[in-house]
Amino acid sequence: MTTTSLPLTSVKIDSQIAAAVSEGLLSRPKWLPSWLFYDEAGSRLFDQITEIPEYYVTRTERAILVERAAEIVRRAAGDDVGSGEVARGGEALRIVELGAGSCDKTRVVLRSAVERQDTVVYEPVDVSASALIEAQERIETEIPGVVVCPRVLNYVCDLALEPPSPGERRLVLYIGSSIGNFEPNEARLLLENVREALVPGDALLLGVDMAKDRETLLRAYDDAAGVTAAFNRNILARINRELGADFNPDAFQHRAVWNRYRSRIEMHLGNQLPQTVHIPALDLRPEFEAGETIHTENSYKYVPGQAETMLRSSGFAPEETWTDEKGWFSVCLARAE
Image: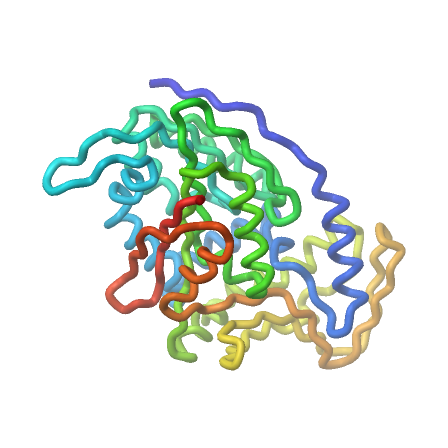
């Protein structure tokens, strides 16, 4: 069938960028929020990261979804699952995705949803309009039956979801281990905000990366081809493009560090020479000492049971967790209570 899509829901991101850059670069130590990575150039670089040999995260999660997507969709919709045939007793499923990006892994879930109910409304949410437009075109071409309703939105700061229609449940996808970019208390608050946007019976599918050996983690975040380094430096290039700054991204060295005490990978940009950067749009001139760093990202790695505990404390009832044979990644389905 021919699908249609609703117009982009647009919000003004510029003021959020300005506020985040001002706060982060005036702090000690300096920092920038990881959501600033994802402009058009950053989204393309991240897509490249997902394909490099060292970055196990995407292919491991995708393998879980390929194996379990049909079951995930049935459970989220409330179908009765018994021995043998699946009884179709559930409701229509509307799928929402936070931080959708290119929606690569999501297509696995969407295909299973279309097999179940013929037509599926898919609502991808992301700060990158270009990534959403490309994803919309690709999904509507590849998967007839999906109605794509993209929304340009920073879900961390301003989460508002369309209410479900009568006879409809929502499945919110928060996959790719994006929750690991937040401090533990911030992650819990984010999940609480998601829960507040849902009604009882809606579901959340949460992807979390699990703790593993240091060498595997460092290779994943500091690949030999330098793609992750370019991705990290792009945050400075974006500030140049959008705020008129004069950063020299090549003067900053990409650094990936495994902080085992906090169970997280940290990404930093290390300044190599003393310099002052001018950001005209903010009337700001941050100074950098030689060796000073900008902390750009954390990626927390979880231990078994940790994600389920966090979900319970945020108003969800965990129903099922799937993982790969190595236990490197987990996907958790939880119900809004």
